[in-house]
Length: 590
Image (cartoon, rainbow, N blue to C red; front, side, top):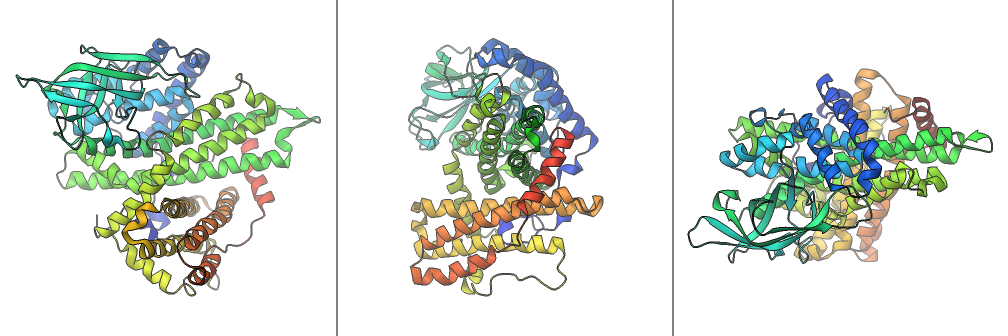
């Protein structure tokens, strides 16, 4: 861990391009796995979209099981349990690729992630041997049952209960769960409930055929209509004591760990959905003619296509950067004699700051991309005949599940601060240094500054904005800062933007080390940095003027103006460069 970048520490340290993983480095095996996922989506999902949209539970179950037979459900499962034991980077690439599968991707990811991995990561050998091989092949389908009617974001306030029976062989489970993906056909349910009068949750492996398990009808939803989402009721269900998952009272930890995993995998999932929407956009724009001209030739359309690409590439850069960090940390844990499954989930959970910010940015990126896709399609985009209409509706849930974006924004700042208070890194000391000399804080351009030096100077300055806002807020409000959600939200947006900007810059620079200068990638980076500077300026000023008195805020605001000063960008020409490549290729090939 000494040489690893700790979670949230990106605010303090300058990372070198050589140290990050970029998508251009996928090996042949990883690309083959992605292609297999893509081929499956095209062969089994797209031809059945219309029927899936009608809520055909049986069809969805059949397609899921086919993916299991093909091995797609075993990518993250170790070989000894019938899987392929792939790296986290590879798991994320599979998550990205299947993300183009509309509601299938929700059902698939729920099974492979939150429906299976709690047993893989926290189960004992008996539980793993009984369930994991059959979950890895699709013989069994999994579901995750945490949310209750009165307990959403505050998961630990759930009322479901479990009591040990008189002979000590079974827990008697009672309760109600809602918004359960795959509920209509899941064979295995990971259920959270409190034992007796425990303050915290425990977790149980419940089989759907246990007497007293009652599955409600599917919900009628705005989007992801093909996924089965229903309530499940537990009426005096006898759960064998050997199906207690983990230790008594460990359920809340299990739930949080699995949510961290779900968040970061959602960050990959939305990339696949975004690329699908971009492909649909450019294909329609090149075919649709107005005034005897393909609309793809119009500047206004090119601008939309370019910004779809810019945001997607930035998200992709950040996702695979942290995915390799997780692989490296898991490897270190294993080297320290940590059991492999626990090492994996502990490494994922460790990067909770990055998981939260990527869930937030990725879900909002996809909303932007699909909204522009509908607009590019014009009236046809509003027709249910077009894929982008489904994409638009399906996208909206991503800002709600795996923890709402509001909760995740608060969580990422809180987690970074708590890590700092535990001594992981000197966040508050560095923040105080930057704040103490706001006039001297900006790193100025040097003579003969290279493109890479310029871009890294900008991203370094963005991080200084976050540090200044953190110092102002923490020193002003102290322990009461937790109640200042508006300010925490502004700080989280600065942190998120800084991480995305740095990740994109590092990817661009690493590409140039082997491939030479790429005008298109520089255009993507220039536009993202230019736009991000404005967004950070607004958030930083919002935080400062909400924290300090006007007299105190003015010199800090002046420093923020300097820190967010970047060179001008010809958005028209740079945007057209990106759009023209997209149009020439006919699909996303960045």
